[in-house]
Length: 58
Image: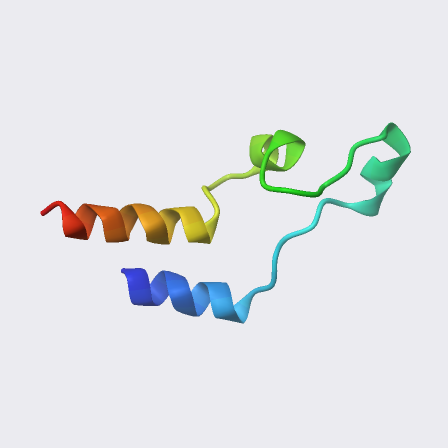
């Protein structure tokens, strides 16, 4: 599973919020705030980290 997520990560760059949101004073920087709220899944880095931690504790 980790290898598959790492392949996805290398195939796709970081997602950006649409430029139209700038008009509302919403910045898409960082991994928190509105970007985090609009995500349908946790970031790939976070998912990989959790899987690695689970492997260490099993």
